[in-house]
Image (tube, rainbow, N blue to C red):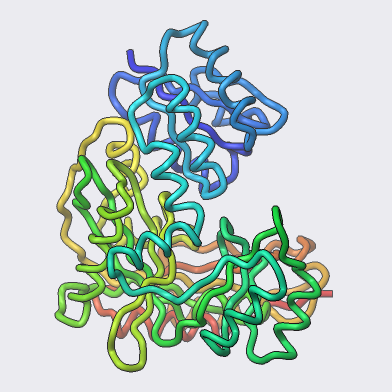
Length: 405
């Protein structure tokens, strides 16, 4: 019986729990957990045992938790997690116990976006010009070099949180007043990339990306975060085999290999610039959010949650799979603030495109407005035709309206 330890602060969050359940389907494993909050309900059946620690982002506490499980069940065989802000700590725990998997150095190259971009540029991989700011003077020097617009964000951020678009000197002055870069408070400044924004996902086994998928953001995540009312779409087109994706495929595979990942899921954001060239936004050593794993699974009629588990635990890949459908998700949000008061247009959307909807979560009346770019609800559509799927998503975001009070 192999001991697999899953690390997560809150294991019952829906997306996190999907990955835990995928681990539980593997043959010959004992699924253990180190959490900040204990599992409940179905989680108590999925996990064979768990340890609760006060802070599941603290590597020392995680090591202590894993050690307690080790004393009961024997040495762990794999230690895994899916969250962006846990990748370095999980790698440190693996190293402490001598467990296979990405090292802390590899995890840091993915997690620290300044270090990541330094490495990409060293290998000649196109990405945004950037500078790590330790003072206001650094910021103005970068502005003279790269101009505007630019983006300021934490070096180890995720999900566009605490990310600012700066369009001019006045905007830079205002943002610097807020973020106050300094030693121990470094801020990453980047050239603002423009063009069509996409993602590129891989599943890697034995240092070789064995699977890839491409999705399109409409519009991009930063614009979505800047405008909390935008109902936006993430689309996995049916056909990604065309020459228009050749450069993205080549760059996406090269990035994973140059950064040194041996096994796991990656999520890369990339741009097709107005001149047709490709540039990398950033890449993460973990599965994507924004329902991308779910829509990719539906596009292939495959379980990509389990594919992740097979890669990180069994060093195995069960594909390839045929991409049978175009699948997209529309995220439901609205203007204003407060709590969800009413959701309009649901019946009209159901009449128009309900036959294409394969999964939906409507905003909950009375719930506070979400601060996430995934909004208060979503609808997933699927069809063999990309054009039909995209038209259905357009109908959803133009018909459904979320009101707050």
